[in-house]
Image (cartoon, rainbow, N blue to C red; front, side, top):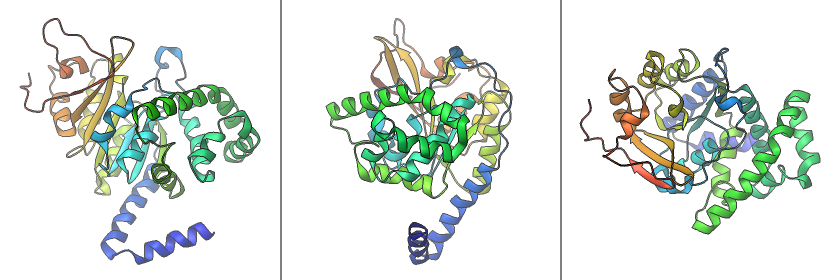
Length: 313
């Protein structure tokens, strides 16, 4: 109750335009939570639940996404939270075709809402915090959510420990090392501005509905994070339509593709440029957008920026 009253007091002090802006984001979040999920999202990628990302070099794009604001739309499990913290997102929409990952986001929500800071949040994924974690998860979703948590916990705990070592070695502040960055994401969760939906970017349905809700609220996508999903399909009419529907003007797209040695190349592209490429029927896959010189191959652990002046087919 005290937290709610404090939030209402701060809101009352905002100028009218800022309150209206906050209202737009809140209205979008409420609308997005009511959207129907895609029921048929096809088989799981490689038949696996990816409870934790294996993209360890997100620090490479931290400066590029710093304080981009607006709405972050992201696939996968943990990267959306990490990127939203750096971006200082106004809302975070998490879309995944795996219902287990959507359930895992409910665990994240319970932990972000309860944990005061990064240390308390991280502890909930360890044996030392198990009793408190189980109580929070059971309250949030009963035995089914507890089962998801127990299945995911080893991978998530390992992922966060590895990221902490990596980020520290690079001197990079991130979600679970910087209380201010943590507060950004925890604040979004507590304000109801993190929405997790089951959806498939290659089908008509949830993604299109999210895009329509964003446009109705006059909101933009500041960052669209696609991970490496595009390597698994050719561009379909439905995928092209979903990309065109999202309000990406002025925003960025971040994707990854596997490179050598084992790892990923991190590919940044202007949102409007991606839309221009994706609507061209001659562009059938992400590899055409990435572009290659003769003899070139993808190199992991580096950033590639798609040149918007490059001629399109």
